[in-house]
Length: 143
Length: 143
DNA sequence: CGACCTCTTGCAAATAATTTGCGTTTGCAA
DNA sequence: TTGCAAACGCAAATTATTTGCAAGAGGTCG
Image (cartoon, rainbow over all chains, first blue to last red; front, side, top):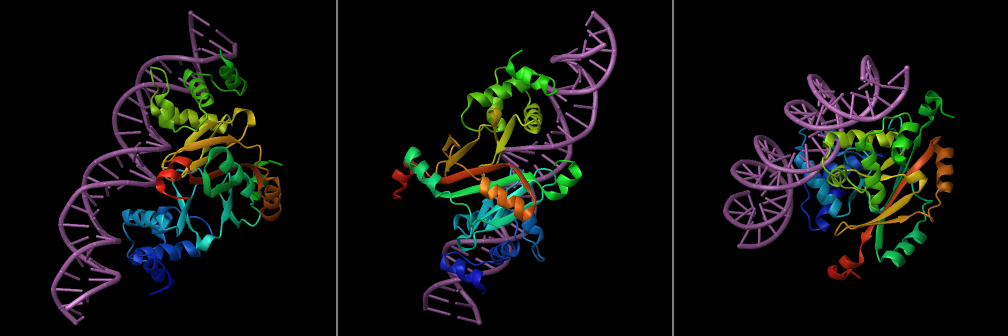
């Protein structure tokens, strides 16, 4: 009967253990997780991974979670947490990910331009940064 | 002996048909292509897909191509074309992709902030927009 | 509370993307 | 041209993701 069950029921969906756990796990994690990561963090008994995928697809279509693309082999997911919007910095060398909230990203000008030029109504965007983290820069001899 | 062979040799790598074709194919295409798309566009005889993957990895490590993450099941690639930097708009409904060059994206402020807060030296970023294209908006009844 | 119907799940198998081992071929420098 | 390291093709192994189906859980109504 947690807040997640309520949210799900209000959206006309069945509240199940799997869905609640996914939302809880993603909320507790500052970094986006892969389906595999999510399953690993489930308390026993762990659900089948097909279930994790199906639930991620559902939660995603409800707008409760979203996928984050970090140019890896697999997708990662994070909660939308009511619209708070985050970005990442990924280290090219070691893969470390930092996450920060996007107070600064004002892309409304670009979005308006896209509307004008292509007729696309932009509803969301994805912005990730890649570079070298302090540790790798020190070791790697980079400046 | 094309310009691509030269580029590759100057970087100390063997110039092979596979690599030259990939660069040519990507240059001719305004939209980022998946490894499969790339292979399909090869003139006969088509290379094995393992070769395509290996070459994309190599070209990518040389900075001649880069991967673009559009939240799909597979990666896509584009040429870096000497630093020109592009962004996309992807339609949530039909998957149509528009590409535009990034005259407007000034993220240097954010990048400086990242440097200050996390110590990451940002070398690149990835910015994609998602929304509804004109056709889908018309059909879908959205406004 | 129990019947009942629907939506979910587990399981197994099918797809699909990507990677790897290995013997053969090719690019290219001497 | 010759020789060798770097690429390639091919086949098989991994890994990610999806799907079909029968059994099980969630929610509603009497």
